[in-house]
Amino acid sequence: MKLLKIRDTVFVVPASLILGAGLALIQPGAFLEGWIGTSGLLILGITALLAAWRWAGAGRMLAWMTALAFILRLGAGVAAYLVLPVDGYNEPDDKAGFVFTDAHRRDDQAWELASAGKPLWLAFDKTYYTDQYGGLLALSAVAYKAFSPDAHRPLLVLALAAMTAALGVPFFFTATGLSWGARLAVIATWLFVVYPESVLTGGAQMREPFLLSLFAVTLYGFAHWSRGGEPKDIAWMALGLGGMLLVSPAVALTSLVLFGVWWRLADEGVRARLPVVVGAGIVLIAGVMFLGWSMASRGAGAGSMGGIVGTWAKESVSWVIYQLESGSGQVQNVFSKIGPAAQFLFVVGYGITQPVLPPAFFEPTTLTWHVIAIFRAVGWYLLLPLLAYAPVGLRQRPRGGERRVSTWLVAFSWIWIIVCAIRAGGDQWDNPRYRLIFFGVEAVVAASAWLAWRESRDAWLPRILAAEVWCVLIFGQWYLARYYLIGIHFPIMVVLSLCVVGVSAILAGGAVWDRRSARPRESG
Image (cartoon, rainbow, N blue to C red; front, side):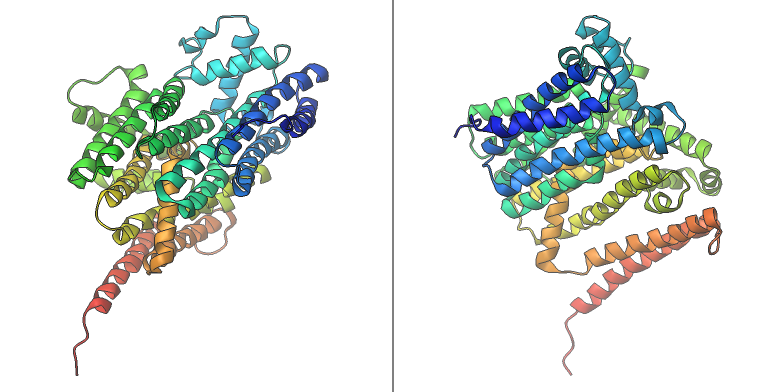
C-alpha cells in the first residue's frame, strides 16, 4: 500500500496554506514570511498524519479520530492564545496567551536560542534551565530556525505539538487493536483523542503531546513484536524509547519497567506471583521517578533502592505538605488535627482528586479560567470511576497470562497515579500533567473496565459513581457557602468526615448486600 499518493497534494497543500495564513495573521512578524514558514510546517505535518492514517488501515473512523485530535488541540491552543490576554489574569503567562508557565518559559528560551545563532547542543546545557533534559527545547529551536527565523511566532511550535499528538493516534489505535481487539481499541482511542487534559497540553508547547505519541509508537512495536512480529518492531520500540530519552529519561526508564513486567507476565510458562511483581514495580517506578526528577538538583541518594524510594517519598510528601499549608489556611487547619500517617493519606487522596471539580465551578475567577477548570476537572471525574472499578472488573477475566497482564496494567495505572500524587499532590497543574504521561495505559484500563461492566452490569460501578457524586455534592455545597454564602458553611473537618462516612457507607453497605444476596436461601 502506498502511504502517499499524488492526489494527496490536492487536499494537503490548500488546507495547509489556508490554515497557515490564519495562523500568520494573528502572530507577530511579517505576514508573508509567517505564512510561508507556517504553511511549510503544516504541509509536512499533515502529510505525515495522512501517511500514518493510511498505514494504519485508512478506516473512516480512524480518519475522524486523527483529524479531531489535531483540530481539538490546535483549536484549544489558538483559543487560549487569543482569549487569555483579554480575559485572563494580569500576569506574564496570561498576557502572552500561555496556559502553562513551563510552556511560556521554554518557548521564550527556544526562540532566544534559535535567534542568537548559537549551536543547538546548548539546549542540553543547564544555561537553559526551563527544560530539564533539553530535547524539547532543542526541537523547538530547530522549528524556529527552519520555519520562523525572522520573528518569534509561538503558534508555530504549538502547531507542531498538536500534529505530533495527533500522529500518535493511528499507532495507538493499531496497537490496542492488536492487543485487545477492535471494541476496546475504539473506546480507548476515543479517550486518547478527547481526554481534556490531553487536549489542553496538546495545544501547548509542552512535553506531554510528544511523550504520549512516543509511548503509542513504543506500544505498537511491543504489541506487534510480542505476537511474533518482525525485527522492524524492535526499531519501532527503539524509536519510541529513544525519543522519550531525549524528552524525559525518567519516562523512558519507567516505560521499560512497564513493558518488561508486561512481557514476563504474558508468558504462559511464567508462574510469577503477582503481588511480588507489583511490589517490585512500585519500587522500580518510584525509583526511576526519583532519579529523573531529583538527582539533577539534589544529587543521588545513598543506600538501597528501597532507601532511595523511602527518602524520595518522605521528602516529596514533606514538600507537598509545606505547599498545601502555605497556600491554604483550611489545609493548615486539617493538618493541625491529624497525625503524620493521616497527613500522608490526605496528600495522596487530595492528589488523586486533582483537578478538584467543585472549585472549578464555584471558585471566583475569569470566564476563560472557569471554562478551562471545568473542562479539565469534568474529564478526570468521568474517567476516575472507571479506573476505580477496573480492579473489580478483573474478576471476569480467565486465569492465565491475559489476566496477569490486565492486573499489571491496572496496578501500574494506580501506582503511577499515586506516585504523581505523592510528587505533586497539592498542585492542580503538575500532578495531572505527570499523571497524563501514561494516559495510554489509563485509557486501556478504563476501556477494559467499561466493557467488563457492560457484560456484567454489576452494582459496583454505580456504587463508585454514587460515592464520587456524594463527595462532589458535599464539597460543592461547602464551596458554594464559602464563596457565595449560600447554604451552611460547615467546618472543613465536618465536610471531610461526611465524605468519609458517606463513601464508607456506600461501599461497605454494597459489600454486605452482595454477601447476603449470595447466601443460598434456606428451603422452607
